[in-house]
Amino acid sequence: MKRRLFLLMLIISITLVGCSSGNIEDRPEMVADEVVNEEAEEAEDVVVEDDGDQIPIHPDDIMMDITILEPNSIGTVYMEATYTNNSKYPITSYTAKVLLKDTNDTTYLTSFDTVMPGETSPKFETFGPDSQDPNDVEVLTLEVIARTEEGNNLYIDYDFKLGEATWWEGGGY
Image (cartoon, rainbow, N blue to C red; front, side, top):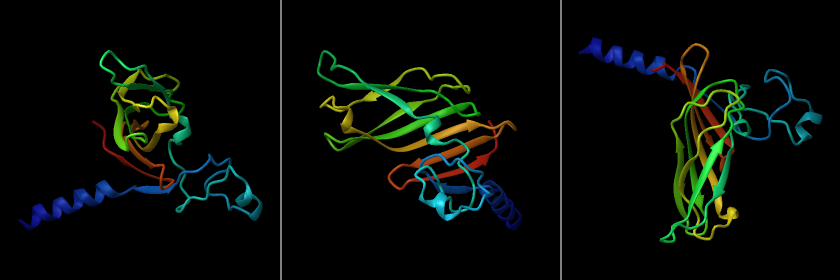
């Protein structure tokens, strides 16, 4: 029993090794290890991350292009999205939690298609705002799974309300 408990604790601790987090703001134009001087802190495009790590995939590299469609024959409004993978990693899963401000409902835009660097994803869709107003759509969170050069999965969670990202690397499929 003690041996099983020890193995379970060992697996959990190995899984959690490598977790990182940081702030999401505009893309930094500097190396993460550089010391930020006062002038750089005043610049709009500088990020000071809590632990000095850079986000492996910046959200600007994979943001969606959302199109709100006309209502169908029974009046249901849908929206479709695509994204272009401008990162260096293949993306295997992409899920955005979206707030529909007109009805205060949340919905999810999800794609499980593998999108290689430089490619654009196939269209994926969900319910859209009844108002058909693009201003009534707000992306709250984004969860991405990418594949590293070593074949491991890279999990990244972006929270746009908090302006933070959390990422960790785990075993491959």
